[in-house]
Amino acid sequence: MDKDTAIKIVDLYKNFGSQNVLNGINLEIKHGEITVIIGKSGGGKSVLMKHLISLLKPDMGEIWIDGVDITKLKERELNEVRKKFGMLFQEAALFDSMNVIDNVAFPLREHTKLPEKEIIRLAEEKLKNVGLSGFGYKMPSELSGGMKKRVGLARALINDPDIILFDEPTSALDPIISLTILDLIKETQERFKKTYVIISHDILGMFRIAHKVAMLYNGKIIEYGTPENVKKSENEEVKEFLKATGIPGFVGGVL
Amino acid sequence: MINLFSLDRIYHPATSVLRQLGGMALMFFSSIFYAFRRPWKLNYIFKQMEFIGVKSLGVVLITGTFTGMVLAIQTYYGFRKFGAEGLVGATVALSMTRELGPVLTSLMVTGRAGSAIAAELGTMRVTEQIDALIVMALNPIKYLVTPRVIASFFMLPVLTIISDFVGIVGGWLVGVKLLGINEGAFINKMIKYVDLEDIYDGLIKSACFGIILSVVACYKGFYTAGGAEGVGRSTTESVVIASVSILVADYILTSLMF
Ligand SMILES: Nc1ncnc2c1ncn2[C@@H]1O[C@H](COP(=O)(O)OP(=O)(O)OP(=O)(O)O)[C@@H](O)[C@H]1O
Ligand SMILES: [Mg+2]
Image (cartoon, rainbow over all chains, first blue to last red):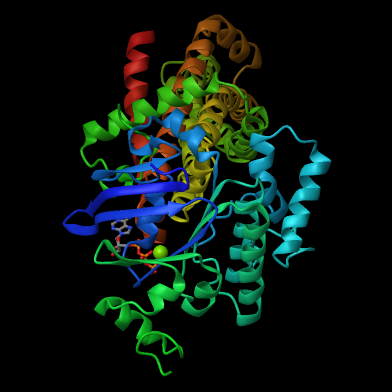
């Protein structure tokens, strides 16, 4: 495995009953890059992401992270690997028994020995970054979908993980907030040079910040490269997918 | 080794009774195992003790009192036929401590707290909150199941003792104050025929029932699939399964004890 590879996925297969969702995924995600995974709805992007953090076990295949195949690890060893990760769930998955600030602070409280004051300060700072200062003492049930998403983002970023998985960070957000979040992702990534894996349908926004784009189709990665290269892809499925966005400058799009 | 966390358990839920029983036993033992692992989550346990114990006090007081009262009436009319009214107190006390206190308390707590546990964990499952815990490298059994099982184990005997007490007071109210049984006979026979062991055995039973109801509720909630509908199903199933199991276990424990 290359030194600059953060995650290497080898021949990953996953079925749910008779439905083949992942059909031999091969992908190398580079250290310190933003890799965006695109693909049609229901295509298995979230399922793939759940494999990266071993919430799901593959039927077959390997996932190498820092030189270990995590599909072979026991729960306790997995937890050491997971401490390097942060994850934003598609539906945010906030703990609804806790208020917003406790949600954001939770990873710090459980995994660090920082003083309470410092924890609160960090959590409030992260909330401010996602444009939610002042909402710390609301309960998740009192937030809108987009606000929950941003709290989830703050929680995923709070303990500066090495690898962060974002499942649709900008869905359910209005265009302005969506831009803010994109900028936040881009800025934090540039500052700390961590590895970001993002699933998104926001093609235009993501092509702006991505270092690499991967397209999932029929359970395989059919295209991988820089946004520029993917835009000019010769692959029929990629062309059709990007054409549907109707964005000028993309394959098949109005020029 | 069976992996308690893998989501695949959700997608291929254990359907046979035997596999479910096995899953519950596994969940119970791992919850106890993690209870002894640092860091101890005492505040989680206290929170559950409050929820399962303190908040069930109301229903337990009411059911206990009325059970004692109705027992007094029933036994009074039966015993009067052969002039044994004096035994009403002893009968009420024995029934409460050995049988009705533990069983009724556990059934009430199952309805109140067991259903809530199943619904809460079920909701956490379908909204991926349990996954979020796992992703944060935290053990969901330790955080969610252990506190609930331990809290039930300790709170059920406490609730039972309270239920025993108010039941006997209820019996005394009806028997002595309403039906006019001689108070001396009522109390003396009670003291004569009720041993401490009767009370202990009842408490041991209720601690077992506490484990049953919490493990069933946690198991059903933890392995919920299928959205809001699934949560409803888990909740119902957990109440039915726990109630039936409590009654069956009651027979087994009682036949072993007395
Ligand atoms: N828990 C599950 N049980 C059975 N099948 C599942 C489960 N989760 C996902 N699937 C199946 O896997 C496929 C991929 O789902 P996934 O959630 O990964 O899609 P996605 O690419 O993330 O879509 P979207 O863009 O809409 O979020 C779907 O067809 C779905 O039916
Ligand atoms: Mg998805």
